[in-house]
Image (spheres, rainbow, N blue to C red):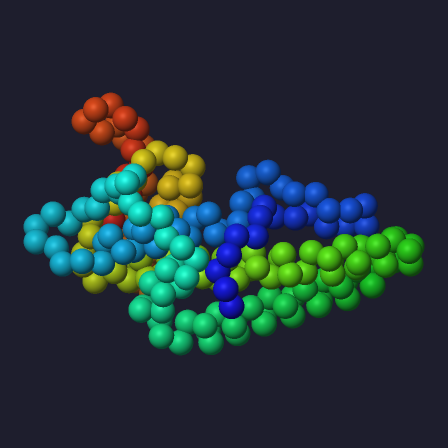
Length: 200
């Protein structure tokens, strides 16, 4: 299963295919998540905080996968099982269309054809989300292990999204950890996103 960009979330029905604004492919957040992961997984002396460097090197699709395999050697096998569950969901979706009594047989055929056309696109989006959520779990594990107290990034939509997902990751652990996500100006007055981790 390859990591590669797919595109925004499609809305598919018997009228055609449209794409939802604001429902971006998780691929665009995965690179940021892995850059944060690489940067925080290090030996710390005193300072238990991390500031994101905008000059951080971009990662290729293969590099992203290699980084993740270091944290989960059987990642591809696990991700494949999650992908198969998503493919089952797609089959159930087709069954739902066939069972829909409010549209004609021709409309059902058009809808199912549109679903089939977009199948690989949607599977790739699902694969990217699977990898993204695994990357978030690695970040949460490193933060807990290193008792990190703070992560700072630029205040841009993509970085904010990743910090929100990390924050959500802490609410899903066995013993939930309190976090606080805020927008604060740095010493130069530039807005930054700051995730405080209170119980790590």
